[in-house]
Amino acid sequence: MPAPSSLRSLPGAPVALAGPLVVSAPAALGRESRWLRRVLEAGTGWRVDVVAPSTPADVVLETDPSLRRAAGAAVEGAYRLVVADGVVRVTGDGGAGVFYGLQTLRQLLPDETLRRAPVLAAAQGSSAGRVRRRTGALRIEPVAVVDAPQFAWRGVHLDVSRHFMPKSFLFDLVDLAAFHKLNVLHLHLTDDQGWRVEIERYPRLVEVGAWRRRSPLGHARERRFDREPHGGYYTKDDLREVVAFAAERHVVVVPEIDMPGHVVAAIAAYPELGHSGRPIEVGTRWGVYRHVLNLEPSTIRFFHDVVHEVCEIFPGPYFHIGGDECPTVEWRRSERARAIMAAEGFDDPRRLQGWFSAQIAPAIASHGKRLVGWDEILEAGAPEDAVVMSWRGLEGGVTAASRGHDVVMVPEEWLYFDWSYADDPAEPLAIRGPTPVEKVYGFDPVPAGIPDDRRDRVLGAQCQLWTEYVKTPERAEYQYFPRLCAFAEAVWSQPTLTGARSYPMFEPRLSRHLRRLAALGVNYRPLEGPTPGQSRTWRRPPARGAPPR
Ligand code: ACM
Image (tube, rainbow, N blue to C red; front, side, top):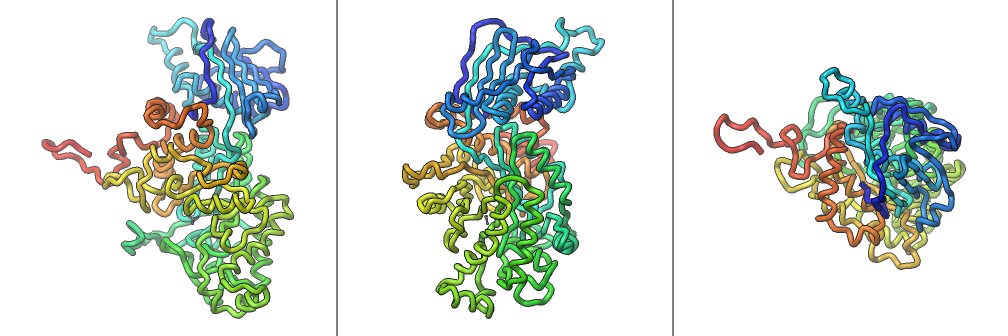
């Protein structure tokens, strides 16, 4: 999971692995071999020794740059995994390919080895007398797997603004994304309801902007509120740690600083960024606010400074400027905005958003990064080499690709995992829905309307988790899993080789895969529906009478 391009059983005896396990790897695969040692030692209790290539070994890691072409792959991450003749051999097109081969190897081992401490070894080491002969040996049937990703951008997004998520969850999410061969973590770090990244030059962004007075209770449309302050933020070192942890797992972190809308938390911290000049509070309701950034040179400079500090934390090639849902009411009344419109000859105030992006773009480019934005940036006039995230449907992606932009498909109807799984009162409160696993599985990252000669503009796809209704890591896991497994297959696996995607063929494999998620400790939603602990409506059943639901 996700399905490999090809998997073939080989003749011969199973390969038995036992501790102390010897792994050979060239120095260039130090990152992958160290990671393998950590996960295997944790899950099996074996000692794992990493030795130089050509030393006899149980597991051989190697690279072969010609593999990508051989696998017919356009993007990095191809691998071949051969289990035969007493050896597990993992050949990658580079470090990423080797890493994905090793993730596949983990799925060939017993689910128990995915745990954080050994349960097999503990059972075998007990004095109960039911000990198997070859202590700790695990057998893998001979097999050859050849595999390569279909798309370069296989993303998972998390909104940490609406509800702050502890750093520990970012590590778990990266681990789970990488387990499913995803390679981008998009962090939505700022929004109306909370600013979550420390900026040294402007300390009030977190001192003030990271905290809100209260939050909605129930659905936003009920207009009820709790009385609990909420907040939190990541220090620069927290985020550097997340970036380094992700890099060890071949995951790139893309930061998003949303502008020029979705900025109430920033204006609360620095009212001079807004239009009234008066203090406002960090957002406490969900939805779109009319407050946007003013277009003064000082505000542009402020956000240049923010961009520079954020770029220093995140070494990856992308910087997301948001650009979604930006009302123009304040600009229509602003003298400065009207002067820019007149000078630039704009007849639509939405073009001011494009103007704003154009002011910010050089700061991003000066760090050698590419600008990414939500599909509204198309209407506003997107910088030429901007990457567009098509969220309001498929059309944004089609338009962007036709205009020569690179595109990441993220359409809400399929890939917004804050939507419910089912129209069922037992489901926890969600913004809307439903988006069942089956629908996600059927998602095709290349929309039908894209001209053939622009198909390669689709870098890939990404699943989103907005957190208005998601307060905890446990609930986040519920929303992601198992939809994320279906998503991973849609964005990794070649449809030509898995056949036209058939959910009835996928579901038994997914069912089997849920046991792996259970071993990993994921709070996934069972295919039949939420457990009593996950359900919104479950009540202790009467002593006699109807069964619980
Ligand atoms: C979005 O959902 N506003 C990108």
